[in-house]
Image (cartoon, rainbow, N blue to C red; front, top):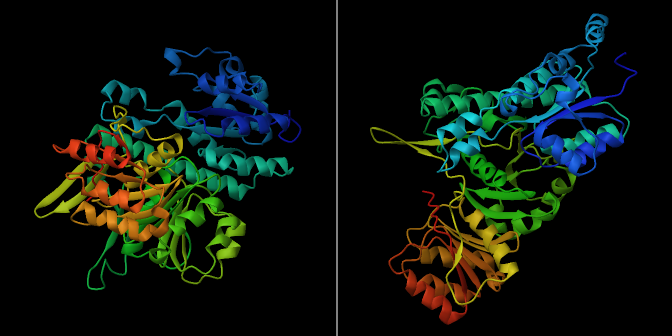
Length: 506
């Protein structure tokens, strides 16, 4: 056995199974041998992809209900072995094999404890042990091993291998860095859970002294939680240092973008989304996101939840943009954007929002609350009107509802399909926000749906929505006067869905 003349081997062990099947199929087609266990192996087999169980590879069965399966020297020896003669000899001595690629993501600890109904037993069971060990081993040996912790990186690696090329050492090092950031954030989240968030607050580290705060007469510093480096855990690839306001807007845009599963473009101005759209590609999502409010988009922040490529870079044209945040940027995109002197590019390697709390100072102290990560599992949608929303309206209502959660209260979102067409928020009364959203949407209000982050105390918003051409509405319900709005919707032929969940954002 030599490191050059042997079958390549990948170990796949993933909780997040997005992109697993095409990646596994692609590696198999290239002649790679696949090792996996549990649900990962099961999914690959369901799709006809040959896979060797880790237990068969190690000769040791999974034990303790699957809690111990990859913690074995046959696995970690294969990952940590270098290409030296002495390491090869030791592997041969035990009849073990090299492992060249490790694709692992971790049990969803942060998502588990974000649920309102989680139990302490569930939290403990979702502390990943073997996955973290695999990631750290592969990242430590990045000079030989490729470690992948983000499903969005699979396609790029597969494309490189299909071209007959090896993943470069620089790229493997980038993946290793991304991996260490993820495991550090993961451990910090667990530590925060065990002490109620105190470890994060007590041990935050100053990352930078900023030029000034929201205004030039205010000072500002950036602090990060333990294990997080760079602004928002990212790396500034281009442009001058981020300002206080840049970081606030980037945070709002990034949190919105990564809350969607489909490729999504978010444009934010002054902490409020002015356009959100999802599509099959970022290129297809950009135009409707911009069309939602092209005036406000000038000088705004763009965030996307997929690698930023040349197609969307060319779409931006001459629009003035302060910053763009993305999981990564292709070399072609960097070339397209290189001529923009004042544009800042922030690569944020992890799409996970690992913080579980948010903190705001008040006079004499601070408020700490759990993050709002969307509807709890107990949330139920109920149609309360005589008319049911049709399939297209229901799809648009779901998108509008998810978008609405990121808009400042009182939040109103008009949407068509998978794109906002008008957004109103941040006003002391809800009816003004309806008018603002309609003004942004123009003629696009006709046939759109509407989402409201809180209930309607009066039917005036329903009347106004009907006047603008809205056909369906989603809102939490819970007002003493709910029936007035329901009756008005029935009178006007509007379909209304009640969620039972409020999403104030002050």
